[in-house]
Image (tube, rainbow, N blue to C red; front, side):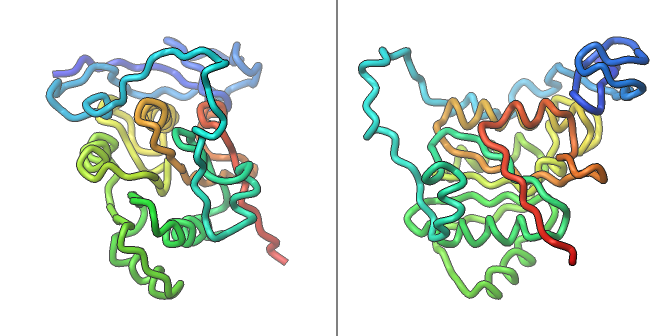
Length: 243
C-alpha cells in the first residue's frame, strides 16, 4: 500500500509546503495555500509508464545539428501554423487555454482531421467517442488515421500510446486527467502539475508532440498553478467576443 502524504500547495504558483503558510514564498500572494492528500509512491510497480518505450538519445554538438532535420507538422489552417512559428514541432508540448465552450475542442478536432498523413491519438476526458464522432460529422471531414480515446488516467493513456505509436497526441483537457501516483482528485493543483509533468516527459523522451487543452478560471487565467504555463513550450490563449 502506498504511503499517504499530505502537503499544502499555492493555488497561484503551485509552490509546495509541508505546512500552511499565510504568504507564499514563491509568489508573495496571501492566503493561497490549500491542503491536498498526495502519494508519490507507486502502489503498483508493474503498471505501464511512458518509460517503457522512450527513445534513447545522446548529447550532440551544436555544429552537428542540421536545421533540415527539424520537420514540422503542417495543418490546413495557416493561422494555426503561424502562431506556432510555422507548424507543430516534434517533441513539443503546447497548451491551448480558453473558456469552456469557446471552441478549443472543435478547433483541435479540425486540426487533427486535416493531418491525414499522421497517426493522431485524440484523448478526451470530457466527452465520449460517440460525441466526438458527432462533432466530426458536423465538420464533414474524415481521417482514417485519427484514433479517439475516452480516458482520464494517464497510465492507461501511456498504454495506448505504446500500442498505437501516434505522431501527435491531443489531451482534452488537462484538468480532467489524473495520475495514479497522486491521490487527490482530477483538476487539483497536485494532479494538474503531475499530469503536465508526465506529458512533458513523454513528449521529450519519445519526440511525440503533445497538445494540452486547458480551461481558464473566473480571473481569465488558465486554471491550475502558474507552474503549468512554465512546463509547456507554448501557451496559446483562445478568446472570443461575447458581444
